[in-house]
Length: 258
Image (cartoon, rainbow, N blue to C red; front, side):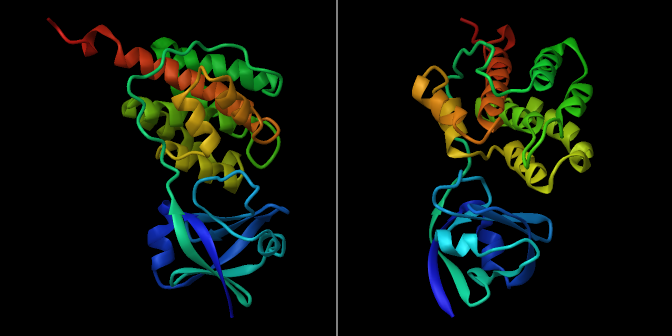
């Protein structure tokens, strides 16, 4: 069997160290394949793919050979695909570091890319998180909204979750994630998994950079380049999460008294 060294997200460490179990590829593109392994979705990515949480990064020819329905073995230190064994040689961490202090961010109209219905839903969610509406209703209106493997409505909610986690607003993040879970059936398996990662504070590197430097044009440009609508929706969601989380961190109840 050919041994191929790969890089992997540390969130997969326990799964890869456990005894091998069967997984089945449920999504395959030229740059990425995703295999369902029990309750965990494992990504196998080419180096040029967006590095989503819960993934391994391997040679392009290995990824391109994977097809939907293909069975993999996940565990015992790696992933086996036929006569190729992907063995982890190095790790990365998709967890978003805590932002201190939380930057002051205004929610502004994003460049073309966010569908009108998602932009409208973003306003509803922003208002609800500020106490002016129903968070469950706002989330329900967004999850699964839009086309593609990761609908723009999901990406927006993911951006909110990641920013709230980075801002330390764990209570609001948990409330949003609790609203997402009953809606998982409305979206794709990949998008549902990425929402779970977002609720745990894990994200693609482009979103991590933007959350930490929202005023940096290069950070915004890098995020907007992700996918068709994904980058713009993630950015708008991050703006909402940072604005809400930042307001909480600077509220009178949180200030020191001289």
